[in-house]
Length: 493
Length: 99
Image 1: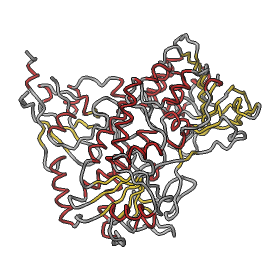
Image 2: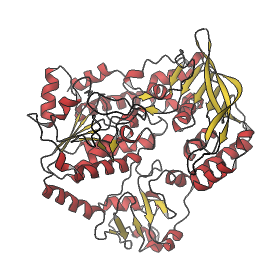
Image 3: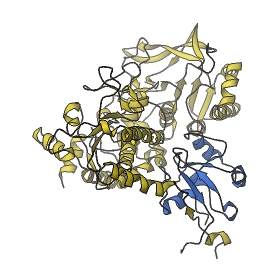
Image 4: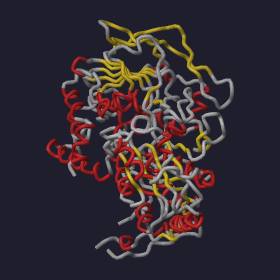
């Protein structure tokens, strides 16, 4: 017999204006406002793209149509190519996006890159409004000598390599000849890279990490991983969960300079203002107090700024670090700055990963702020190329809108904001110029150009093949990394 | 049984997001407990929940994850707010459902 409470279940009632009821009312209102018949295109199928599509369908009613255009044959953006293979739960959101793709009002058009297969202007002719959600496909640079030596990669490239992004499958990584890896940056991407390198290969082999990466990890000679950050433990960007996971790896010694833990009054104040910073500091302090044994080691270098990638025999061999000190911000509330002290030291590094931030790339036909790496916008409405306050019918969401930070859920709030603005400004949507409009018109144009469009059903065949191959290897899936092979499977329908 | 607020919301077609499906790997089911008295009745959040709450949008002192609030008799009358918008949702007792 179940306990008494077992017979009970939560019965939820809505207050006026609450959730489901509000949604029903909103849809009805949208349809009444003339939302019916609007054709939307979302460029990019990562979390920002799918959450935007979701909000568009909810807010613009039954008559609205949303097409998602994706450069790769595979959907889900960084959920597939960014989220660490050993963080399977984080990828559960794929189920929600897949369910959304089943909505008859939504069409997925994969293997279509805007700026390669068709221009943004051509795309826009087919739609009432276009939302750019194509994220960030480049990196911030360190700006130091040696940065372009063989053996230096961005963390993004390394992550896309082990996660099987088709354009990075052949990244020249040779872990069998690598004993030390230096990672510049103290964020969660840096932590992911360090963990993948330090975790037993056998553990990684059971995830959806690419087989080419498993082969490398099995023959890895990596003994040391160095994380380097210009500022201190209070300013580091990594979050408690990721940090705890990294510091708890079996067989890995953790080395940190005790001096970095002497906090300035400004650091104390920063910590008091943010619970997360306090928790991060506690986790680091606890790890410092523990004696750990192991044949691999993790070194976290706080208050060190990479000054140069040191070369030997034409490749990276180390990183020269300058010690820094923190200077309190001039204005209250702004960040403390790291200033160089003129003292240097060098750490060994056969591979150097730059993990100091992704950066978006502009495409012709849209305003772009190259310094900030974003499309200039007001709450998601894109500003005109000529500096006008708005480019009618063009919107942006995700990293391209606000820069490369946050978690999957951040895009949910972001999409709400962009779609809110779209509802408010729908009067400015231009008339659709192309006939037929939407996906039908795009397909016709792309067929003329010999572009094979991958539908969601096509992707699901690729997906099934990956899962089938994974079963033989004891993995949830074995990712395909060749676009040509994916397209062959997609064609086999 | 102890059904979670997230599950209950979905069964009742209330739009509470749950990107990781209750596996404590996201913070999209973040809710704000309206009444401190009810917040205090909840078992304290563990490290895993705090890890995710720290990343939640619009964190407050009475924030919790919907997937970690489990139905119990004491929680009858609990009212939570979904922070991303002005949507409210009330839980008025735990009615039996056929199993």
